[in-house]
Length: 454
Image 1 (cartoon, one colour):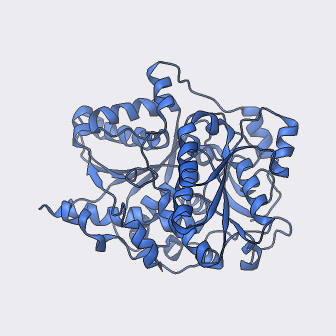
Image 2 (tube, helix red, strand yellow):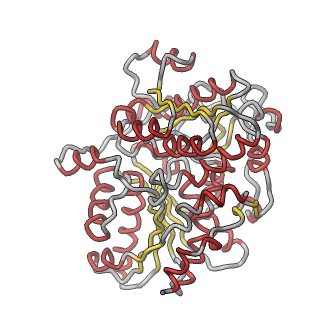
Image 3 (cartoon, rainbow, N blue to C red):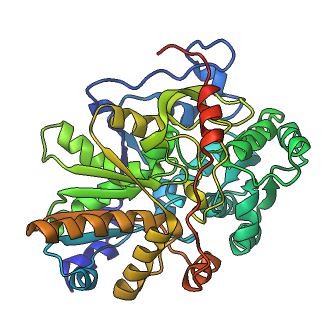
């Protein structure tokens, strides 16, 4: 039996602690501010939405946070997730680069999202919470929290961005199979949703609006909490199981990445892969080049402003300093619903501001072209979001070819595309088009950023 096979059969290889990048940063991230007073938020301010255990993880500066054994027990269903070398893709590209990918599509929900959905449900269950309200874009997060809610006996209500609700009915069916209730957002079930629909009854929705609806529901009931699938520190913390495993797997391959690539929407799969490697670098280890790949139609890192902004459209959430397109910005309905968020995780934004990572933006047709090339070489059909990372990795591999150098490239294949077949049907039929953001709407959204110093 090979060492690699032994690794995947060895449950002891599942990390016992999550890694917290904040402990190794040369400068701390900016404080989170109360939406009304603009004073730094206190744990008490967040208690109506989150259990105290998650609030403590949100603010901790400890390098390692223990993973509860009940969470690791569930992780054993799909972790450690496999890391593959894409030898057939390398051959197709005729590149000297060594391309590796960490495949998170092996989870029950088909993406990296259960890495945080399971612990969030666990901590809410411990706190006596009966129901969790949340939002979802493409449906990967919603289906993951629905899965976790079923495991812990928690009711889950999901506000799904309307354009994705219509585009991806099978994601909705998966959520309902797990027992969750899925509602198209904006909806008539909240004041936030009704206000949006009053202005535009055909509004396509946005993650910012869906967040407002979920937060509103959670804030009104003592037995209901809110859960977020990306952006927040504790979410990125949970996702570091991806990078921690990848570091050990790369060592087994007697290699170490020169370049790390991941798609970015809210920042969770990106931070999950990248943060452990960045932490090792900041502690004196090998320097890595880190590339965040985002959609050109929702380019928060490449075109957003690094400023304080609300995480939602109705301005119910605290203010965080992040790369943002403005909380009122509505991205066009391109197929990568998980990347249609106006802001970027504060920690990802902070490391970008520190110069530790770089960012590029691509249109969707070029990303789907890369995804199809990958599928034909490696046999895995990627999620539309993951196609952005593949596009970035292929471009880096082609640079190696042009320069005649061999570099090691590792990217995060954050999920499969089995529920995204309409997008592939559109692409294969030549119907998929690149969608441009509305420059006027972007300018208005950025002009409306809150006046906060810091």
